[in-house]
Length: 462
Image 1 (cartoon, rainbow, N blue to C red):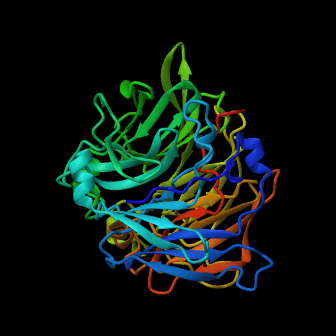
Image 2: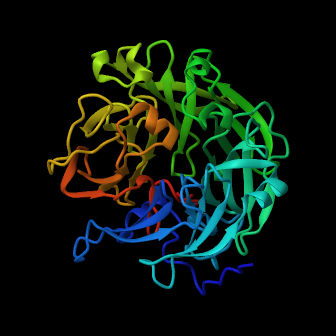
């Protein structure tokens, strides 16, 4: 058992407000989930370092490719300063790294040497299933009450319901399932909260039988994937309301609430509209005490010669954008949307969340007619997991989604890569021609920046 060492004083990477986080020092390291075989890569992001833009260390997981590392997060973040659960003695030190396929959790210590993290505890899937009734672990967020992890399946690993589970902040023991009343939710995926308003929001992708062996095209056409957002009372852990986006809008994935804790809106992404293959972005909001959602962005599919398409897309003659990730800047001004199918990162101004304005886009890779990196090197796959620096001046993305889905949409294979994008503070982006990392023999997914990033922390002060 690990007992987390207490931090004497407040961790300097905890920030009371989004504005104070934007003024923090620039990131110097990135931790990257690598898979097939699994590991955590450490990338040097310090421009003055001799190893800048290079993979400087790889922590290999002990089970080869069995885990399929996916989304991971920190043990603690700025939510430790929230008055509802004041834990300033916590330290942003441990990475909580689940395997989506194995349901195993690794606790990884980034100290004393942040460039050479090490595994200090492994929580086996049997313990997760016994204590929570869940499996297929997906997303990690540090919250005031503990470490939250979403799970996509029930303990037997085939169907649902999925949901949320908790780990203890201080010893990483598995506490149990979070929900007291889940209501009608069966599918799970992402989750976030409006912490000052006691509201928790969840989304739904699919149960393991619908995603683990690749996209089930028949189930997609029958509209059997998730198409709703769910709202819970954070204190009572009980279901409050479902907002159904319509069953044509299949696979509701990412949730990005406004960072300002006074605001009660946020953004959700939908992978595909089965009537036209478009992806979309929705804003959720309160209206006379009820939750609602409105589509604010639609990204169309691109008609394409079927000879250039993989078997999964030949009959439709187009490349859907396949929006699979997005990130919101800490000032709630810019939303960055990754289109894994078309190989685009799109920047929108969402200062007015109901009237999103296109600002710029960069393109690299993609299913058809792939665009090379500005360095001249080719990138397989498309823009996938994207992370944004606290000051909003740099974005980093990788190119792998999920192995079974990679193989469907990019059957020639994906070689893991990481790309940097330089951002103008007033809008506009450019891919950094001097930063292109290729991970030898592995694929790359989630990125976490040292000290936090724009999809890590919850702030309790405006």
